[in-house]
Length: 191
Image 1 (cartoon, rainbow, N blue to C red):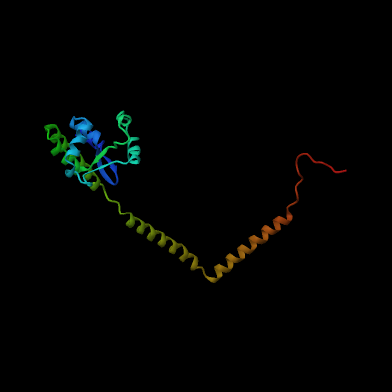
Image 2: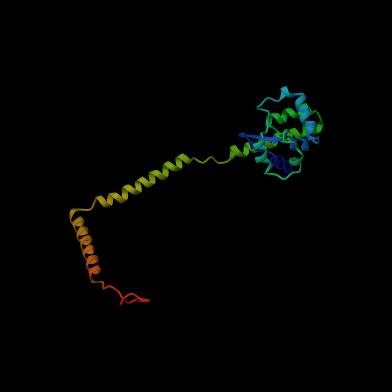
């Protein structure tokens, strides 16, 4: 289980695909990165674009910030890492042909499968259904509030208008009764 977690930590999402990078795979297969890449180049027909692709400089800069490694500095800018999809990893085991490669490929495939199961097993939230329910509740609330307002009879409406008119008159009267206050502070007298 611990090995699967280590492998899963080396699976990245690039171009919308879950991939592993050549140097991580080389470490797991216990070969040098250049040896792995040479084996791929000798058997390039086994690695179509949906099995493997080379990272762009922007993708490399973006993903290399996620991990600390000295090989980033050693790697020439002209040799961007190769990214292998799940199918590309399976194909690597047939190209490398060692017991370690076969065992590692099995573990890597299990890690990909476990990640896929985690994603599909996660509870799917029905966002549209939730929004529809909230909109219905809001609509019902608004209709209820305005229904009460519209049910006011003429007598009540006249009483509310009288109250509003009285409040307006009181405010106007209060403004008239307010005396101007004496200013506080330094007063300069003009002579």
